[in-house]
Image (cartoon, rainbow, N blue to C red; front, top):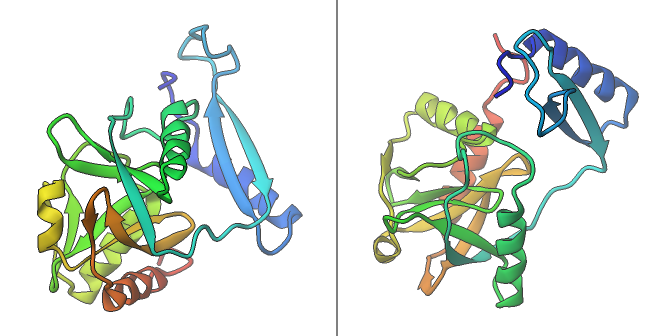
Length: 212
């Protein structure tokens, strides 16, 4: 993004300092930005700055959630970046329409992700991850890695609204939680899948706090 990367040890040092100075439970966000500003391109020799922000700990919604569907594709979907007014707008519009949040459908009709969530589905034996452009979240990566370790089948495939009646459950996940149940996406209901939800939480909890 800025012509050079910030050293991981530098970012980790800032995060550790914030954690040591704060309460035991907190929310922590790190943002990398150019000191030259948003609309001035600094040379590759200019080191990006790091802003670390803390706030009260949050757990997110309990669910089950209903998701409105919106045709939307985020700019640079694989990059987590600030200034995405779309997700805030579509979330508020979904709530105004009586939903809890919104899921995105791309121009090909494929479900990709939700406003601040990754989507995951269950077919009764395997975890199904949507095939589309999206931000692969940290929690999603942890869950996929640990599901492999548990020997749970997983696959990536295109998921459309027409496919939802064939699935046995659905969830959203992000840094708040490895799984919140979803009981409806657009007009399509999804069945309760408590075993699927428990499996995702078990996989997440299997991740070691410190890499071996």
